[in-house]
Structures are given as C-alpha cells and as structure tokens.
Length: 448
Image (cartoon, rainbow, N blue to C red; front, top):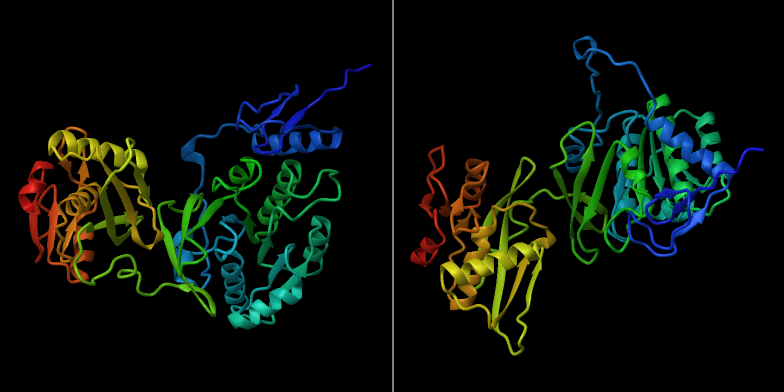
C-alpha cells in the first residue's frame, strides 16, 4: 500500500513543506502551517506544473516576435503606467490600502471602456450591486455595456462568462472569491492560488483583459501568497493617504512595458481623476522659510519638482532622533554623518526630521544635495530661495556626483520659473538658468 504523502503550507506566504514547522523559514510567521488535503495538494501541483512545464528549446533567430496590441482606457495616467494602454489577455493586479480609491478608479475605467462599445463585467464580492450603482451614479459611470455581478463563487462567474462575451473584467476583490471545489476558506493561500490560476487561463484563452483588486497587509504588500504576484502580468500599487487628495499609482511589474512609470490621480467628489497640473502639486512657492529646499526627481520619464523639508532642533535626551517621511532613514543617517565629518556641523546633540511634501516617496539619490541643503538651512535658520533647485547624488567621501536626465530635470524646473540650479556637472544643453557647479559638499557652504 502506497504511503500517504503529507504537505503543509504557510498561510502567510504559501511556502510548502512535507513536515509541520512552528515557524515558517520563508516569511518568519509562527503557527501558520496547515495540512493540505489530497485535493488541495493536487491544486498546488497543477499551478506549479503550469508555470514550469517543459518545452523544446528553439533558436532565438527562429522565434517570431509577438506584437502587443493595446487599447486606451481613456485615462491618461493609467495608460501611462500600463505602458500605453490595456493589453487584451493580460492579468493585472492592483493593490492599495483601504479607501485609497482602487474600486473607484476601476469602476470609472470600466465605464470608459464600456463607452467604447465593449462589454465590461464588474464582479463585486465586498459590496452589493446596489452599492456599486450608487457609486456609479456619483461617478456618472452608468453605461449599458457595463454589467454588475455580486458574486463570490468562482463557478458562478465562469457560468456568466459563458452567457455573454466580455472584453474587460474587474474582480473586486481576489481575497473575497472562493471556489466550491476547495474546502479552505476564502482568502486562504490555496483559494487565492487556484482562483488566480483560473483567471489567468480565462484571460489567455479568451483574450480578456482582467483587473484584480487585492488587499494589502500592514507591511504594505499584497495579502496572500507571493505566487499571486508571480502569476499575474502586471502589478500596480496605490500610494498615498486616504485623507489626502493626491494618489500615486506605481508599477512594480509589467510584462508589456516599463515598471518605472507612475500615475498621479486626484480624489474629488466625482471620483479619482487624472491630475492635470502635476508640476506644481508637490512644492509651494509661498514665503521663503528655513529648512526648505527644492529638487527634481525622475519617476520613469516624468520629472517632478519636490519640496524637501528639514527640522533640526536641540535634543533634550541622550539619544537624538533621526526620522524621515518619504525618504530612506538609513541614507539620512549616512548624510548626517557626512555633515559632521566633512562640514564639521555638530548634529549629534540635535534631533533631525525630514519630510517630503505631497506624500511621494523618493527612491533615487538625486535628492541628496537638497536634503543636505535643507538640513543646513534649518540648522543655521537661514531661508533658501524658492528660485533654486538642488540636484545631485552625495557619496560617502563627500563628492557630489551627476545624475541621469539632468537636462530634462532642468527644463522642467525652468518651466516652473525656477532661475537657479546647483548641480554636480554642467548640463549638455544650453539653458537660460544660472547653473552653479557643486562637485563637493564643502562648496555647499560657500554657496550659503
């Protein structure tokens, strides 16, 4: 008699092992393993074999290129993040914190696509059809080709797809859906894996673009197994506080385009709309105050002018505080150590706080020079002109190094009537701005 195989799976990350463990070696969660029955084990084998099926090797010169066809969502910002538009047969995952506007955006996009004469199916598992109707009235999104289905059973969704041909489907949300063929609860690792696998099969076979809404954990990642992000074609995250007007949609994975683009949206009474005047949303031209400096960062191909704010105050405790919002805290500590070593500014007895306005997060090093300028400005209580931008990466040895796309950044700054720039190297193109070369951090003090 064949020995029964056992398989345990972590309900936090989807890691599987033949033995039960108290702590998951993959994600570190405690008491998260459950034993899978025979059917659940078969689901795991199917999804693994689908992603790792063997095939015969072909010379790359014999392979024909696949032409990617796209159609517009009639939303400029979303099209930009997706790489130019929606690809038929693609599976897209959108994550974000509650209330950030995921459902609102996709309902509006579904209405836009329905206005093009395409059949759109909105599957809601969290709200009733009547609640979606109220939101559609507010968004002015009532279209004859937009169909609502309040259902959490995958099998019923598949039946609906047999009754009518759809070209765009929205699943809200993947954690509320469940399959009757699996005994585990909705939102479990096995359920999410199987449902995503079925949706991927439908998208590829019927050339239907499917958008999935996913909840996120307190750490900010998509709830459920990591295999969910691996299976889909595109992963988008909404950033921004629900109490703020501006929301940022950032691409983290895209098999059909770049992953460095962002979309900026504004929450209004009529829903999420593309922010038309993004250039002046992340900095203020009000009265000059100490501790404020401007910089220009690149988000994909888009330059954005940001205001960096710093507050340096005398510490009344033995351990000085260093805290940054929208900026890497470890890099802040490095820049503070550089100020003490190279510029001999005694910051060990001071609390230092950094804030990037607008709720955006800086992911590149071009803002280093602006961070230093804002800290020195706050420490000396001396205001910096709002007509000046600081662009440059600061190294550990105190050099200021050039950044890519400098000409594009300066052109954006000049369009906002900024007349001066502190950079590491002279730009390639001629500009009407006054450009000051700062190749060492010590020259920053000379500029002051």
